[in-house]
Image (tube, rainbow, N blue to C red; front, side, top):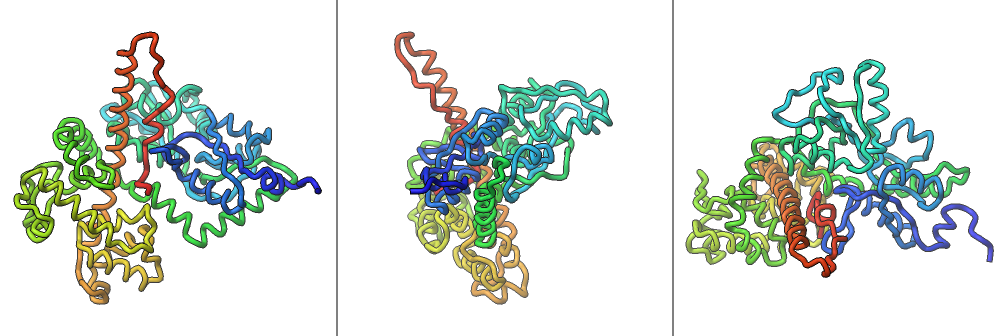
Length: 463
């Protein structure tokens, strides 16, 4: 039998694709014994496409990723790697599949710098950050500009330090900042270093083009079939303009008010994550049992009289009755979402139905189809939802006018509240774990390998 010669043949003969990555809320993380992340999902599709097993190999730094690729220990690197001119000299990149913009971050309440010559204090960036190239260029203009490179703290840890006032400034991708502001509302954007960078997979520079050509082909097909757009929606679609006051208020109430009702959400959530139900309730009522809108909906889950009656709720202002009825209604809507909708997007369709009614949600799907879009794709349907407010469009569907723009914002808000609740819940679990370790006698071994924060910070509901 002849020995495999090309890099791609070697991967197939080996039966596994070795992909280097870094832990992070968009690249790769683990939750409930499942692997998740934008880069992970793409890599898994690619490995399946090749007919081999995927082996994810998290690295401690971007330098380690580069070294692994150059040495051949890694077939490719997929860890939200920005494609920069300097990196192109060292590695070969596949197609860019989303773009990021590097932001200088400071803490709310401290002076906002007007430019890079106005920095007063410490600027710390993570080792291997693409922003270092931009900073070196800026130093020619701002000769007093200095920064420190941290080999210990990653971007998320540096953002935490800025929020706590331990570091004055850091630089991260806008996608990371937008997510972290949901946990640390004190973080604020000051300046932009570059317009944008493309994110892509990195490979070794070799005379052999087999792996590179295969990656190009794979991405071409994924762009055409909508897979990339679906992943964009899953991990970034809910990130919208940041509201400092709303986020700060939410985090305060999550710590002080939510514990009063948490047991009820957990008890009545059924197959749902209780934090999803809690996020929906916050969007509806801010966890106020006596909440009432001008349309007459009431209670923690803001039920109409008809819905409450159908769900067996006698008193809409009673917290447990409202939560139980709202959960039952939401699960009922979830079951009615067509099976053609991907499992990890069904909840967004159910939330839309909860907000404007099942008929209007189905009308939005019909409009998507009329416009040549995919009625089973949330990213497509949410784009046409506002058309339900326009007479030339709502006249073409069965149930007529609906506040589609509000429904789209409604779903985005719930997604962001959920993301914040997952983070907060796991921070609290981590704190309890530390307390338990302190309480253990010295001769009892305690498992400290789990990192619930790293493993559970999520972009979207999955499965």
